[in-house]
Image (cartoon, rainbow, N blue to C red):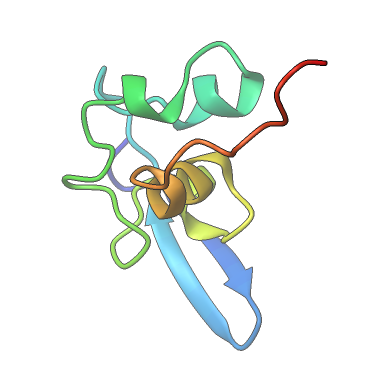
Amino acid sequence: GDNDRHAMGGGDRLVFVHAHDGADMASGQVLRGTRKPTDCLAFATRCTPEHPLGVTMVSSEGACAAYYRYRGAPAPVTAAPR
């Protein structure tokens, strides 16, 4: 429920993340690989690296944090086929 809190360590900081049961929180499904971070209604709005709502946004290596960081990055340039 909303009262569940999980401590996440990240270097010298400790972040408490509230566990949400709402349909707009997809962190568990992102961890399982059944949804993309952009499928979550909270992604980049209520859930950001500065205010994470799920474990996948807390860690800089988490899927949501990576999507957040690189969401506006251009696609990588690939070599033309020969």
